[in-house]
Image (cartoon, rainbow, N blue to C red; front, side, top):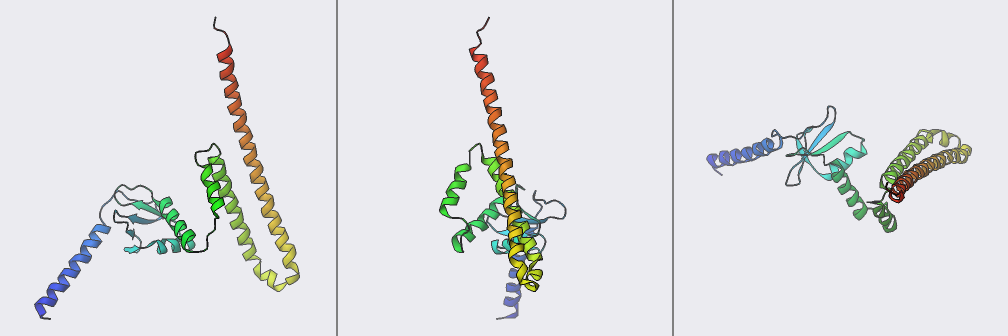
Length: 203
């Protein structure tokens, strides 16, 4: 290849890379809070990491989640928060490609709560229950060295941890039942007031 051809090819490659960088770093409405890693999502479905100034994949986003990094995915043009939709995509890939965490029955039951009056309560209950399980896992990890040094203590410790987890789950379920009762009382009270006003003869 002649010198002029090589220079022309190099110039074209550099121009293409520059165009991509200009596109990725363009002034857009997408902005993340201070200290939060911003990921921009472009119309071509490409994800751009503003921290590393490079394009990334869902696998990279999954690694951020596993590393407990604080990040947000924003639409590059509108600035809308797309974090939930990206996380749902990761869950979908894990459920279809790996070992599924949810059975078909569990997924069907979750779907039935959408649009239900219990949707908010169930979401809050599941979130707290998952956090309790994570706390339990952390305590088990912290005590793993002790368990290895004292094998005879493994069973009592496990019973205590599981007992605490079950108690927390029971308390959260009780709180959910109380909230359900309050909602039912409010609904019945409003219904009774409306019925009474309807039946009261007008003067």
